[in-house]
Length: 449
Image (cartoon, rainbow, N blue to C red; front, side):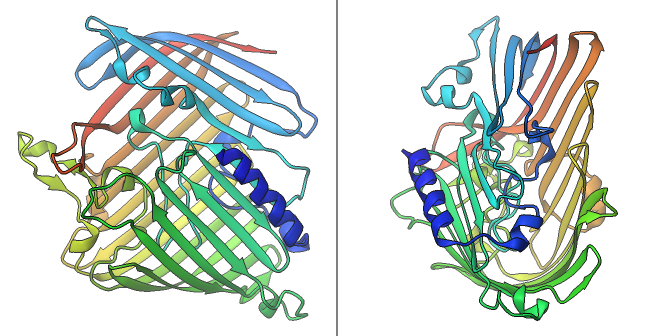
C-alpha cells in the first residue's frame, strides 16, 4: 500500500514541478541518495547479479551461535537492490529474533532504489533508513531505523526537485507505524537573473511519530521553517548561509544560524561539505531530537543504565520534556570521492547544564573486487571534545563491516555492532532497551553472474 502511495506522490510531483536545470546538474542529497555503500550501478547499461554465501560464528551478548548468511545484489538498468539475512542457532536452539514474526521477512530487504536516467531530479528508495537529515537537521538529524538491530524497520524515501519547489518525504516503516516527515522547499525567485535571488529557498519541515505510545502521551509533532541562499559562488564552490526556527507542539522551540561551503564537483574528483552552525534552545527543546538514538530514547522508550548493576529503572538520556535549554555549536565536514571513499564527521557541542552533545563519524573505503570497509560511530550525551575518546557507553552505536577477498571466490566477512535489544515493556506500555554487543566473523564464497 505504501509503495503505491509513494509512486502516486512521485507521479503527481513530477507533473506539478517542471524540470530544473539546476537540479539536473546538482546531485541529490537526501537520505541515502548519495550513500557510497549503495552505489552498485557503475554505468547505466550494467546488468549484474552477485550472490554471497557465508558461514561462521555469531556472538550476541554473552551467547555464541553458529551462523549462516546469504545476501544478493541485483543491478538492472532502472533498479538496484540488496537483500540478505542471517540464521543463527546454538546450544539453546535457534536465535528467536531471526524468525519470530512475519516482519522478519521484510527485514531481508536492505534497500531497493530506482536509478533514473542521468540528470533526472528524482530519488525513490525503500529500505532501512540511515543517516537521514531533513532540511538543516534542526529536528531530524542522522536519523536511523536500524540502531536496535533486531527491531529494525524498513521505510521509504522520496525526493523530487523542480524549478519552483522541491519535495522530500520519508517514513521509517512501510506500515506507517513510526516516524514520518516531509519537507516542502519553495524557490520563489527562481526566474530572477540574479543568482542570489534565484537560489533563495524558503522551506517548511514537519515530523511526527505514529508509533504506539502510552495513552497519556499525545502524538509527537514538530515543525521547522528555514531559509537559505547562495551568497557567494566561485567556480565549483558555493557559500550558503541559512537560518532555522523549529518547535515541537506542547514542548519548546529553538533557533539556529549557520553557513555551509559546498562543492559537488571539486577539481572533477570529489565533493565536500563544510558546515558550521549555532543553535539557541529554549526549555523542552533539543536540536536534532529525532536522531540516531530516537528509537531507543524518546518520550515512550528509554535505555537502561548498564552500570546501575540491576534493572532498577535508572535510565540514560534526557527526555524532551526535561531539557533545560542552552546553546550548541555544530562543526561538520563531509568528503566524498565517487563511490570509493567517504569521510563524514559531525560534532555538536552543547553548552548548558545537561549532557546533550552528539557526535558522528562515518567512513567508507572500497577497493574494487578486493575490499569494502565500513565504520560508523554515533554517540549522544557527550560533553567537551575529549569525552569523545571515552569508552562506548549506553548512548553509543558502532557499526564495523569488512568484506575482503582472500582467494579467488573466497571472501572474509566481519560484522560488528554496538546495538540495543528490546526488553519487556513496563506496565504503562513504555519500551525499555539495553545495550547489546554483536560480533560475527564469517567466511564464504562470492559468485557474480
